[in-house]
Image (cartoon, protein in one colour):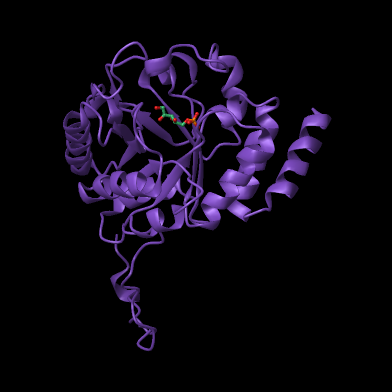
Length: 293
Ligand code: 5RP
């Protein structure tokens, strides 16, 4: 029964403190609903505003690439150090135990292979299955300038529209076709188009010249892919430069799971991303962890 005889009148209405009207710590996302913000808040650490996503979705068009032959053996030991897991629903169900409670960004495009035209993708997951799997976000490639540019943009638009019904954000991944120039002009165009259609965050690539401008002109957060395997120090330098120039973290695959010591590497990457640790110090940390293992 309600204690109607003990209702205390409010005292402190904070009249001298205006209510926060900005609403959210991630760029461009202040005006979304609670559920979508909560999912973004599970992807991006609210203390640092950044994320270390571990990408191991490569098999969806590349097959069992080096480091992903046995996801259960190579990726599972890394999960505890990642902020987010990015993979396909097939690998998630088959090889990631549901007791792993890290947020999942679900690869939701597919239908292509390295033997065919990469940009010819379709939506490969129904929204109901993404919800069933508890996905924190859905991801699909946009291939700007490629043969199937329009189709890939349409895929992302459809994911955004279906995800918005349920508060599930969409990550647009800027896929680079074989003949694309990897420069600020290209990534500025690709990331901006992805943001304008309503993507909630965008994966792009770090470039030495003009990355800061690409980030500045993109109204939502950008995370960088790692790209092809580099020596560990170079990969840490790339991550450092990216976050220093405004990236909200990494969505890194090969430079972690193809490292000589993936467990040490993911921790070193985390130190750079969340604490802006200098690459040389993070590399020292990598070597210390490696020799201790
Ligand atoms: C594949 C992807 C990968 O998730 C992305 O490329 C990140 O992996 P890596 O760091 O190995 O480049 O989107 O299409």
